[in-house]
Length: 191
Image 1: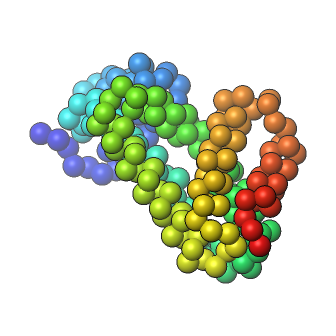
Image 2: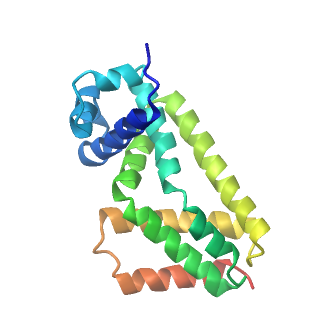
Image 3: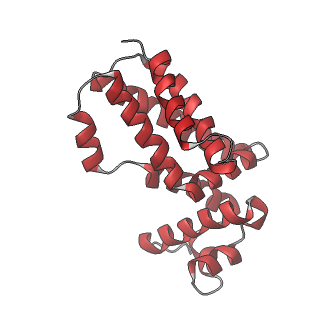
């Protein structure tokens, strides 16, 4: 019987994110999740049907935790519709993802694992596609400059910038990252 306590499930999934980030996919076991969450051994197995279920839940939880809060969205919607505003939005996005370092590293582990697990690949493909579509829809309704292709190109550009920042932070200094963000928006987002 699967347990239904949503707070406990979230805590276990958050613990799984930390295990994935620290130990990689091979280190992700129910026992490791229980230990990271500080719960009795066997708890995770009461909340997740199997390892695949846990991996799918981790993928969903990552995107749930990455969403900006309502105050941030309201501030963004009330800002000017300029490339400078767009640059600030991209800067905030890179910071928000970078601040959730363990989540992004766990997502990278999930992506690698998805190359060997078709069901996980399907879940991640649907989730990433939905995220890209949501970003395009938000952009188009916001009145910001640029088109859907610019949004997609910026997503690809900043995903790799974030990978560099989280895995090899010495590659680009903070000043270089700032210049890359500004230049990417200037070159990809037409006025």
